Length: 110
Image (cartoon, rainbow, N blue to C red):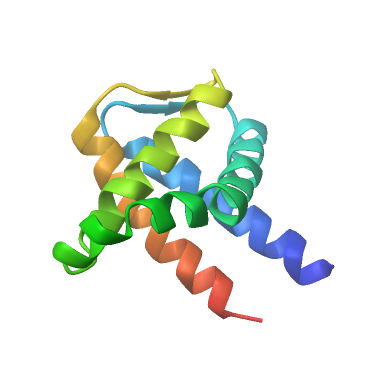
């Protein structure tokens, strides 16, 4: 339980770090904690379904379409949380790459 909370706080700090990209805003650290929870739930429940439906495109692009899926999941989280604003598509794309790499690193550590 303690490691789960530590990972959650680290993930929220990473989300706050992406706010330094132009076009991305989070109102406070508490909303970053909420965004981290929502992104985790999206990655657990919605993302596998989307990846299954887009498997042929992903296969043809040698997995590069996963970057587009990650960006779409970030926009989905921004849709649910109005205090998380994504104004620039390129910044959202870079932020989704940073968040995806950090999510994989956090997921791998036990």
